Image (cartoon, rainbow, N blue to C red):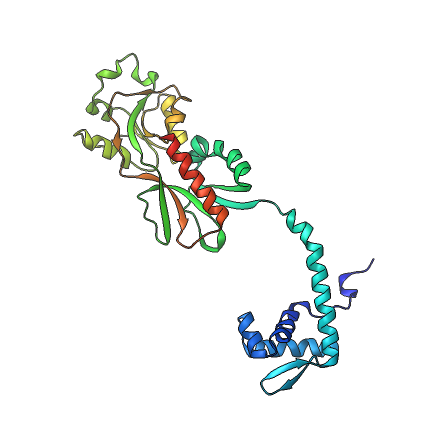
Length: 299
């Protein structure tokens, strides 16, 4: 068995500098092409020449030209590069689909997003890599391409597209109604029932204020970071929860919940598709457009 350290190979990482110098006929021009300094090109060429044991270039004026030995080395090196390139083409054609990294809350994944994945991956020839997390998305270093978050749409260094303008309507389980007529519950009566919050009480505070009632936290109120868990808790009769329409519309049918007869109240928060401010790959833009279209269809 032949190990890689038994092979007599030139310092491959230094060859781009040699080839650039040959193409440009100048170390300065090669440095400009590669975005490095003149001294880097000179040092890389000298190291390759030291490995070979002969000069690759002869200097004249401010330029360089290959020596006879250098011409042979450059010709054979270029032929080897061409051969590698040709051999790699079939493998490049077999390369898998673009990977798009998406960060979203667990509730968005369960209630809305996951059912979209197979169709998007098939139609756009991409693979969606999901980060299901409560943490804010990290766009630095390519950690995330797209995030789906609830808020006011203003996050530094990002651009946001509206997915759902959440309209709030209270949902209650027949278990909690305990035989009462839903029509008999006004906003004040609802405020005295156990209230279920997701991330905080913003929704209930806003909804009750719209109906002239002050929000007062109670020991019976509960908080669930995951909105889909909150829906399950409401279905179990633990309290009243606000439906965030149309986002939660498909989830309501999965729980034994009754929508109380109130006109929807527009939430001060909304659901946004968030991207870094810089321009992204075409595949990322295509996925973002597809998600925005899918959200509009839910309305």
